Length: 153
Image (cartoon, rainbow, N blue to C red):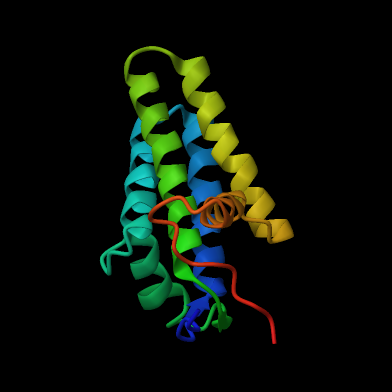
């Protein structure tokens, strides 16, 4: 088995996106805005797809990081599990938007609160459930989940 190439991920960038997700979803809940939930879903989808025009990436690279508000924390890691987690969040928030637009607001806000709870778990305790799921799928040999956890030192 050949070693995978060294790959680096800026965890401050990830944390910035998580902070925006939490903040925006809380605002969306308080003011009952499907538009904000839709924006978060789209931002997560674009981030999950690794697009260079993903809103959180642009805000981090051209605003927060450039202004020196935070310092990059680049470590050896796989980006795919984090992208998978973003896609799961996009799925939940996208479903919440559909639920809000069809009058199923209780279901919608439950979905949003699941994302808020999991984002807080990642932000405060550094446990990414989507990343953990990705690595479980990798261990099971599920196609598409090709990266194993990075081995420490």
